[in-house]
Image 1 (cartoon, one colour):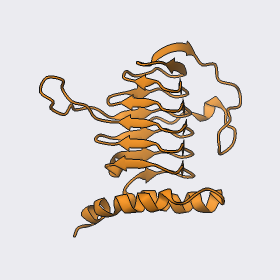
Image 2 (cartoon, one colour):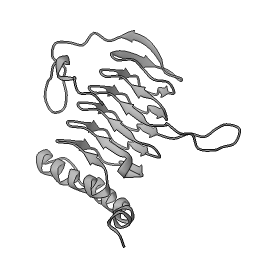
Image 3 (tube, helix red, strand yellow):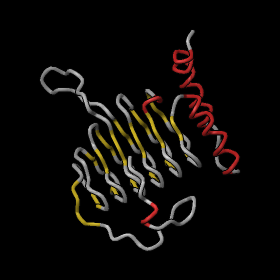
Image 4 (spheres, helix red, strand yellow):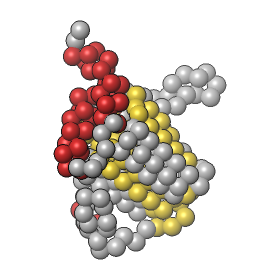
Length: 189
C-alpha cells in the first residue's frame, strides 16, 4: 500500500485519537495533537490548537497556518482546498464546505476553495460555503451563512452574511497565544 493510501486510510483514526486529547497541559498536547493532524495529512503550522470534536474529509486539502485556534466541533468538508490564516480563531460548530454543485445538472463545481484570512474571528455555528474568501481581520457573527466573499476588516452577520460595519482594530488584539498588532497580519495567503 502506497504512503498516500495508507495516510488516507489512517486519517479518521488519527483524527479520532487526537480528538480525545484535551488541553490540560496545553503546550505538550498542542504539539502532540498537531503531530496527529500532520500524520492525517493536514498542513498545520506552528502552535495550532484544534479543540475536541474536529471532523474533516480530505484532510490533505486543509492548511492551518501558525497560531490558529479552532473551537469545539468544527467540521471541514475539504472537497477543495481550505486555508485558515494565521492568528484566526473560531468558536464552536463551524462548518466549512469547500464544494458545491450546479443546481441543474448536480455536477460538482470547480474553484470552490475557501480562504479565511489572518486574524479573523469566526463566531459560533457559522457556515462558510465553497468559493468564498474571508478577508483578513474579519469578524463573522454567530449563526451566519457566508455565501460570498467578505472584504478585509469587515464585520459580517446574517443568513446570508452581509457586511454591516468596517472593523477598526485596536493597537493590541487578543489571541489565545498572546496579543498582537494589526501590522502582524501581513502574510499573503
